[in-house]
Image (cartoon, rainbow, N blue to C red; front, side):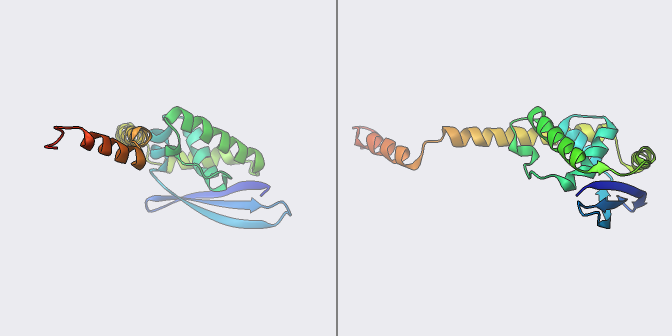
Length: 167
């Protein structure tokens, strides 16, 4: 893919519809309609801890073109996830040169149609933080858990000792 150009932005129920013109490396042009849930920007803000709406729009618009499929919870924390995601978005933007000259107006239209409530972002961020906490605890438990051979050996040793559980 060589370039992406935003043609129009409109509201379709609870979605923001972004019509894009995509030009591939052979100069073939296709039209793409990208439906974005209106609260996707709140979720990205909660997931990555950023409030810059232009950066959030870049993330959501370029995510379909990312080469790497790593996910938010593949990382230990939001900071590492944000660094990796920013790098992937930057790579996608460099690869897909914006073809439009009216991106500022289209970004303004997206901002006018997005849901962006600071209270909702705070609640969503708490959920994201809780998932990170649970995931990290689960990973730690797996790392610390003895493997089955060690558990069996420990049981054998325990049961061979006198006066253990009635033995």
